Length: 420
Image 1 (tube, helix red, strand yellow):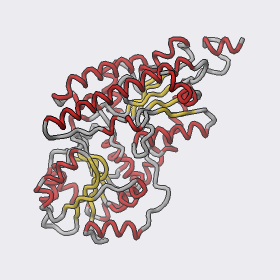
Image 2: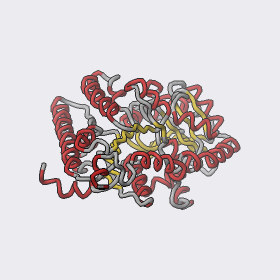
Image 3: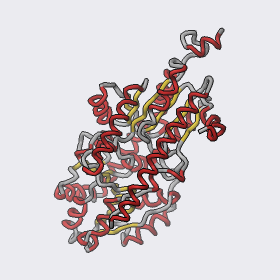
Image 4: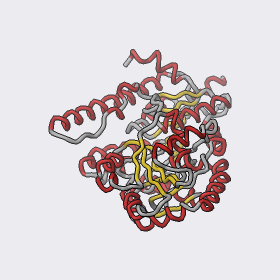
């Protein structure tokens, strides 16, 4: 591991360091949030860096597969390779942290890989008071895997390690009150809630480009486009949306569009009942630079999170819609943070994810232009104060500020020596 020190030592020579395995992936939504926060801290004069895994060995390159035994063996070998890469990432990070004589002062470990929160804990035994650790929890996918038998053993082992890291962290930050409650039950620690943010697009999307996307779907200017975009995993159920579309197939003026990738998206593409609907379209995945046009083309944005995984994550697409003043149709539990925010903003409706009739009635209500305009005004008023980067950065500044020791603090082993 000595060969990596020159590069890593430079990355870690900062006052605040974020550790996130996907930090080098441009399309990773969490990476975007991490880098935006790091940029703001740098603008405040705090030396800040971000450290992630080499993208060539990033675990997201291996996808679940179906097929014969050979495909399954290849997938299993890929998982082993990824776990080895994750272990090396954690070990190298811990060793490099121990080599730093003074900095960093604050380490923020973000979610994954399992055990990343232990790297700064291991490193700080030499300088316990100087290195403050913050565990930033955005997702709890292990809890979802525990519900699926093939993953239960691995998920349980990862859960034990993750909970150990949470217990050792100086501060825990999460993005929803429901997630904070779950953390409290698991590790008997209090987590500070700071919402994830979504900033508005840099400019107004080209109206003609937006109109062209709508025309490609067969939508007129008067059509209400109900859009689900982005990733759709098994815990983002869309079956009730298909049944609702079937119930509205004979009514003009409403078009359902799903655009993106994921297991649930692929399941729908193979489902004959969805393909046969006259008011249902499958859109293509768009590159990053075209996302704003895609989101502007939808009139109502669908967010879905299965009720039994409430508290394991907060769907960020909720806030992307609110940042663009778009009404949200939330399929899931009202106990979820995003669902509560939609209601608080007066910017959408929340209905159960498995109730097609409730979804159908909600779509009828949202098809009314007057209703949508009122909800758009609610989103426009609520979003800047609550989930824009400017609206939450002060909370993060406060967390970082109280984590950093005062200059020349005599109670700090390292700072005390420096102070004489």
